[in-house]
Length: 269
Ligand code: HEC
Image (cartoon, rainbow, N blue to C red; front, top):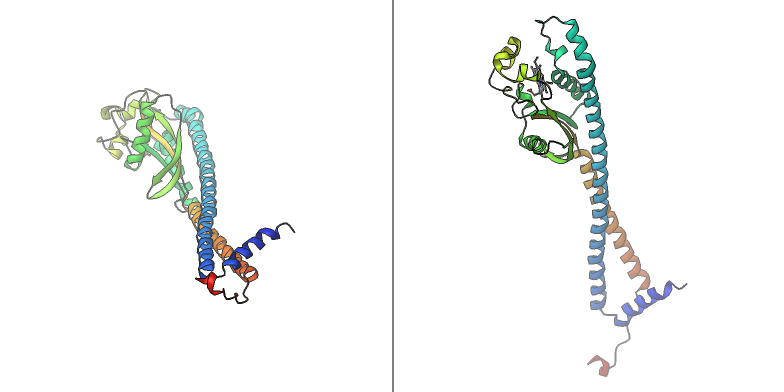
């Protein structure tokens, strides 16, 4: 029963003064502490939920990026060479020959099936053939970081996109082969189909070995961050209300409500 003594001490303290001022001060201090501790508990909860949201988005983004890279390298190393053997020199079937087109079109189908805007993909390029691949400001920064750090294999982290927080994973695309320049070098060397379809204004003049683009996967953290925020608000109120109930019980059980003895005149003045 050792735990009773601190409560008794509190009771004595409360009842010793037994003036409204003492109770009032106790209640105000308790309320301030209740708000502070509820804020701390909900803040800690939000912080750990946010960490979980980032981790979930990271795992999804890495997985999607790995899958896209695997599919691109299968196309590059196996499919394309087989297709090129079957096609004649003059044949031009972009859907069969162009890895970047295959990836973009496959992603479009995936995005439709997946519904919504939770994941996104970009073949961000500063000077693209296809305008839909043009890099936005943040993507241009990613590309220039790859240009400045040629040995950097990957960039990842949190980024703001369309006003929402996303986790992104980005890898560089280098002009690794002279053949790329047939279509991305001088427009006069490019296939006629290509210049008719994309024009000759952009997507040309690329330089061998340069990083020209980045394959970026985005995973939105909107839903999880929203849930974390709502949970934090709920935690705050649950914690605050529990502490209010505790205060009520403390006052109910521990405060001596018998009328106080009237102090004799000497003590009073
Ligand atoms: C036969 C012509 C041709 C060759 C060769 C070629 N590309 Fe392309 N590339 C294109 C076309 C056409 C597009 C636009 C595809 C689309 O609309 O999605 C494209 C798109 C791209 C894109 C997306 C940005 C943009 O310009 O729209 C990148 C990055 C790219 N190619 C890189 C390369 C690299 C690297 C190589 C060499 C390994 C290469 N390409 C070889 C024709 C070619």
